[in-house]
Amino acid sequence: MRSEEPRFGQLSATRRAAIIPQARTGPLGLIWEWRYEIGLVLVVPVAVVVAVRIFDWGWVLATVALLALVVGAVPVARAEVWGRCRCVFTAHRVRSGCVEALVVNRRGRAPHVLRTVATPFGERAWLWCRAGTTVSDLEDAAEVLAICCLAPLVRIAAHPRHPALVAVEVIRDERAWAAGPGGHGRRESPFSGSRG
Image 1 (tube, rainbow, N blue to C red):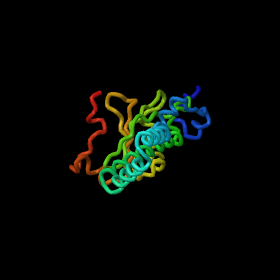
Image 2 (cartoon, helix red, strand yellow; image 1 turned 135 degrees about the vertical axis):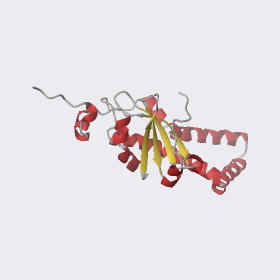
Image 3 (cartoon, rainbow, N blue to C red; image 1 turned 180 degrees about the vertical axis):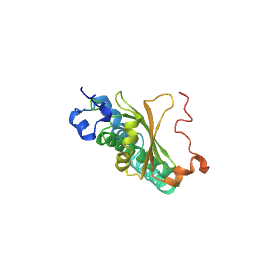
Image 4 (cartoon, rainbow, N blue to C red; image 1 turned 90 degrees about the vertical axis):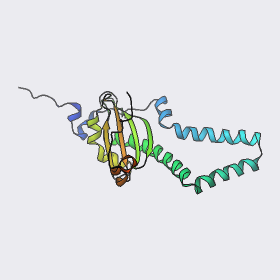
C-alpha cells in the first residue's frame, strides 16, 4: 500500500526549494515593484528642468532649500516623509522575505504587495496571495519576515471575506501596537474599516 504524497505546502523548505522553478518578474511587475524609485528618477529631473525654464535657478534652489528646511524643522512633515520612506523599504523587504521563506506558489511567484501604509506602530502591508499560497504560509514565515523587515515582530491577518487578501503588520513599536488605535488598548482587525 502506497502512502499518500504530502501536499506542496507540507513539504520542508529544502524539498520545496528543490522543486520550485526560479520565477522572473515580468516588465509590468518590475515597474509596479519599483514605481516610487522610477518616479523619483524620472519626475524630479523633469520637474527641475521645467521649473528652471519657467523661473530662474535662484528661485528653484531657494524653493528646494525651503522645502528641505520645512521637512527638517516641522516634526509632522518629517514624520510623514520618513513614514513614506519606511513604506517603500518595507514593501521591498516583505517581497524579499516571502521569496526567502519560500512563500511562493509552484511556479515560484511570491504574493503581490498591493499597498503599504505607515502606522503608529510601524507599517502595514496588504498582500494578494496568488493561487497556491495561503495565509498559513505567511504565518509560518512570520519570523523570517520580521528579520527581513528589521522589526521585532510581524503579525499576519487574513481578510474575513477575501482569503487571498492578507495584512502584514510590521511592528516596530510593540507598546504602540498593544495600545491600539487612540491608545485605548483595543486591537482591531486591520480590515475592520473595509467594506468588501
